[in-house]
Length: 208
Length: 409
Image 1: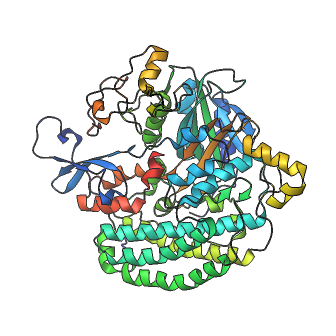
Image 2: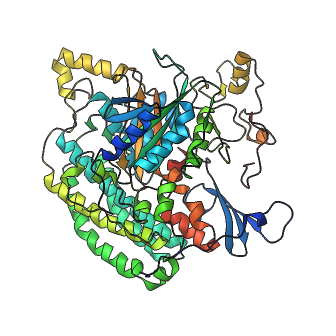
Image 3: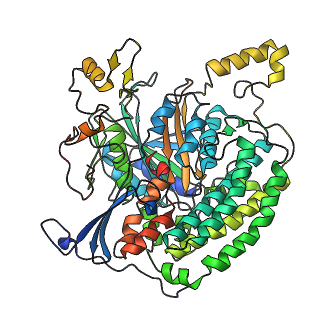
């Protein structure tokens, strides 16, 4: 167990495979990031695993909507893979437009399950072929995806000195023209509300 | 140790899972408000008699949006939130956060600050493992160890209180160093605790870890094989119990961990007993690190002297106009790291912990993503519990040592 390839060897091997699949490599802050085309995501990550970066430790999304000077697609999904010893690490990225989905890597790592669900929950990025793509962290009746940069902040109902009461859900509905839903401050009102994703399959765990 | 590798019994066929009305299986809802789930974890379990057929962890009851909150606060304010995620090993979260920001800023942390960080981080790891021991034994029905462990932990809490002023949610590590130097009685306090602790560790071993009742209860139960650990991205002590020699203190040293002599202890069995044993041995290693760091602790500054990173000392404000300007800029605007993305992996008491921070050049991070170990570790609960007994599942949860604040963020 103590024997392992020299530091950097596994990463170099994985990089070679990724470049062949159309990956673009950037280095900064001691991190290596590889942007791969969307259709090659599963192949790229499988290549990483074969090359020796055997653990998928994290998947997350980035919303570049308000990033200054950003050109290109709005979202990026980042796969954080490292070798069993922990010294070699790669960040595989795929860039996506709003509404685009990305192939699921649950076939490569079963542990991608929760990580992809979290990304779906936080940014609304769908993973094709995920066996159970439901929200992970937020309540079922929460509309929207909190880590999108256009998700509103300040969901606390406020009573002003002049007696004016501000219900954030209603306030937001006034701005966007959307139905405020029943996501206001009354806990009891949440019953029977389905999220925008429609009715959810009974996986033995739908909260309610 | 048993000679043959124990394997979990095979679960019943998929076709027999409950769908229509059936009396063969019983669905049990465990948690979220139950002490044995170590927080607000909910599990939906299907049982065939006593045997677990399926298990679905439901998380999110403690989702607080720490990441989003941190994106709307300045870099210095981040340490207020980071340690609240893992309330048992808060210093690890503080350390992971400040390391990432320091890398963005290219800050030079003084040696003394690094040593103190390592000492506190390791002591906090010990405190976290002590809670692990106490609660795991409690789940098995042994009440006494909990009080033993809490007694020793109390000494550590006193140290943390002396240093940071609070027993939890420390916020003592700051970007560029420490909030202030440790008090004078810090060193004797730690030494005194370190001197007494090995005796207690022996006591633990004799009383419960080497206890044949515990062995019979946990050996060969809820096995996580090496392949499973890789597939489910298990990290930390739980992964080391499955034979993975994965420790970021060793393989990607930070904060001067390369200066200390310590071993990465692993076990091959992957059962609950191995997970307990690995943590026990890790406590011995942590003690080694702390005593080495104490020996190397020398007087010196504890903050990066760069005035764009840390506040000037109070006495300079009285006679230096420049100091006042820097102070004003730091307090009103905050830090301005250059554009870029950064990730520094660290080893918390639960596993790999890192903050992926994206800077847009402003004083607030554009995106913060916490790679918290507990979420990924929790996934191994399902495959290791299926086919086992319901009563074993309860100690299996404890053996992964999840902190739900760390899971839900």
